Amino acid sequence: RKEVEQDPGPFNVPEGATVAFNCTYSNSASQSFFWYRQDCRKEPKLLMSVYSSGNEDGRFTAQLNRASQYISLLIRDSKLSDSATYLCVVKSGGSNYKLTFGKGTLLTVNP
Amino acid sequence: EAGVTQSPTHLIKTRGQQATLRCSPISGHTSVYWYQQALGLGLQFLLWYDEGEERNRGNFPPRFSGRQFPNYSSELNVNALELEDSALYLCASSGLPLSGPQHFGDGTRLSIL
Image (tube, rainbow over all chains, first blue to last red):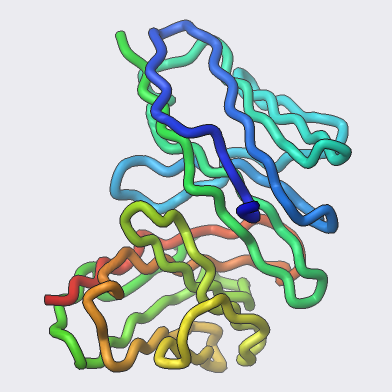
């Protein structure tokens, strides 16, 4: 099982749609979780951290399920500008920690 | 505040040559991370430096090496370049080595001919 696995893309949705991405991780000792966004041929940028209690930032909601070892990202009322690749990121390793990135899910929001 | 800066933007080499990539972290950040983003493989962790020392490395051969300078900038060196080393190399920095998000530079696109 891969360390971090994401929904296979691509996702093509119309403007205004709600879209959800899931991500599973294999290391039960993983400590922190993030969603990054990467635009085509650009660097990844932090979208939001994911907390155990779930957290929301505007149209974006992230949730963590430690028992099932998955995290999710929900985008409501999607905009054209949301078109990007969304990367699930897991931090683990204690003092030798590293970030492990999923391969990403491509989202295209269509007019 | 300036972000993470990387140079050069593009680098073209031939097989067997050596490449040096450079990264300057955000001011005040002591940790620098290197990643390789090859087509179809996603972001792969390469190296982590903090306070001038290598703290962790990913599953890459020894010809991938680097260092961190007293001003926290960093170099990634790739020796004996192979065709499959063609990729985007991203540098990231964070202020707290064991927590907090990483902020990425624009990357160096390395092409091996």
